[in-house]
Image (cartoon, rainbow over the protein chains, first blue to last red):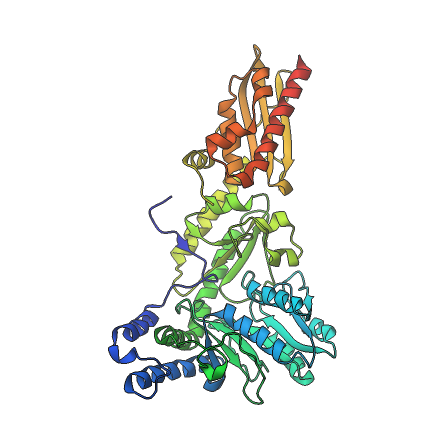
Length: 391
Length: 123
């Protein structure tokens, strides 16, 4: 292995901490006055920590057009998705036991839905088009009188394609059906307004927007109250929805990260989008490459490309100087092909020969040019090794 | 996935890449398919009862690429009996190939067997 660190193009997996976020977190860890339990508001230590928590709550709420009291702290998007799905489904089980979602949701949604199926719920998994988009009409057609919940991700983590959340939200609100959105990949890339989009529940995480790992939030509509059963029990924090001592430094980090993400969104999107285009133009010079997902309805930073005639694991090993995700590695180190690419109609074989490049705030033009050169060199080399009609 | 130093060496600089043009003293075999995760093409010349100038082309994972490359060196100068006796386990041991990849080495062994059959057909 090389001693130099690879070029990091895996921002959709996680982002490095923004130094400004790190500084805010470090202050919480350094300052004795901020190290009280935020629930111990009977003394100054607790009150100071609580003030920082509430400041962060307001920062996160502002980034998605919500009121602060609608934000519930969690350990990340996985827990938020679990709380949203189990919380609503179990609370409203007497109202109906049908849920609508899609085949290309994150595992944190799909596996929670599988568990709900085991508990007697029925789930309709919508198949996106070959462009990765689930059309709102598909959602409308799938609704039944006993549908109580729709869950769709805002931006797909593997493809970067954007779902029309506002249209689905309108539809759900008209029918009185709860609407959950996994927005882990969209904060800082797209404008979000939970009220205008008629979203009832939104899963959020800090570590995709230059915040720390291990902290997230669930937006829960409060007016009228949604009805949500907790999945973690204990001290009754977060109005009883999520027990557990609040991690002040993590929460403060998420607050600063969300404020920066929203404040710098326009600038980040323009710069990163231009780099993404530069990368695609470079890769598209190679023969037999294919962009996965809708060419336009996509966030600025993700590019998922299939390379015909190249085996995926070899491609990843050959490109070990570039940190990217493969079409087989989203969930694990297994060589199971990506279920997202398969849902789009890609063969197992082609899904495994796909790479997800995801760019971010700290990506440079030099890094993109180096990535283009490395991919071009290695794809060409591996294709030359193969028997002539392969691929 | 981690790879042995030998796999890494052969993957980065594969030996004897190519294919010999068909001729009366050239034998060739091709096995596997991209959908199986490995496709291998072997070709070599026969002179004085020995396999000479063994070439390979391969599509597959780093273990497959390294195994094909390693094989061309291992079987250089082999007799027909050597080909008959060759087992995929030799490649598995030498290259430290993990069990989940052994199926791909079986395809490699199939290609060696096919090469031996073709040789036998020329006798």
